[in-house]
Amino acid sequence: MPRLIILAVTLLSAFSLIAGPKATWLSDSHDFGAFDEDLSTVTCQFRAVNTGDEPLVILSARANCGCTTPRFSKEPVAPGDTAVITVGYNAVGRPGKFSKKVLVTTNASSGAKTTLYISGTVIGTSNTLRGRYPVDRGSMKLRSDMIAFGTVEKPAVATDYIEAYNASRDTIRPRVVRRPQFVDINIMPPAVPPGETFVIAGLFATPKCDRWDVVADTLSLAAGTDTVDIALTAIVREHFTPGAKAPQIRLDPATLDLGRVGHAARLRRQLTVSNAGNAPLIIRQVSCLDPAVSVTVKRDAVVKPGKTLKIPVDIDLARAGNSAMLNAMIVIIANDPVVPRSVVRVVGELTE
Image (cartoon, rainbow, N blue to C red):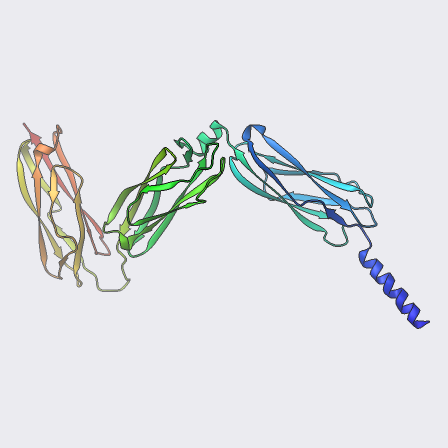
């Protein structure tokens, strides 16, 4: 008799474990595929059969984004009947691929929480694409035509990216046509289906760059017959160790004043660079964008503490154009931690 009692108790315990409502979902994901943004809101339905022995109630359904809206009834679902959740996705202003989640909570005795997934690709309208991807190059639409790496200290690297969109009806494979050696480019994914986005990621490697201060170059991409040029910019600076011995740059004169000079004059002036610090001063780069002024100095020229360096400055005013004034700027990049970038102006009044 005791054995029969134990068996009965065991069976009752097992029955109690499976008693209550139970939600068996027929599917937990839905892919809308590719569709036009003009459809506005698209919907799908998820169904759950109550395979338990008590009424099933959907308590809540919460999406992870305001663009996704679940709708359901809180009425009890009898055993054997089906509960339905309708999920809508608002595609307006959201071109490209999407993936959203809806967390559903029921009164099921086990597995009370279930996550439902929706996904798809929105083919954007021309107005939406124009606002979100203003750079239009046929099949490729870009958010920007510039990758700006910001300020980078040698020998560090910097990264930045641009988001882009395939506006064609075919899969495109964007490729690099031209890039500077100091910038590596990665395009992900390599093959971009219609209506989907891709990323153009750049890595600026300062050890591969022999330029300083403002560095500007161009990246050229192509997809089929469509091409796009992307500006690459960075400001390359020296890395300084705090507390270490350092050079101090001194310039004489601070301004090269030519006074009144004729338009056809050719002049030579001299700029003196002194090192008032206690470590070698390295002249990384000297440049002038004005075509009338040229400066010649050996790259990475070294000025020892207490020493000077004479830099010749040649001025050809015939290349100054029709301007009545010369106001050029010589930029000197050095390893002075306090003044890494110095400016000397070349000014003059041009006469006939």
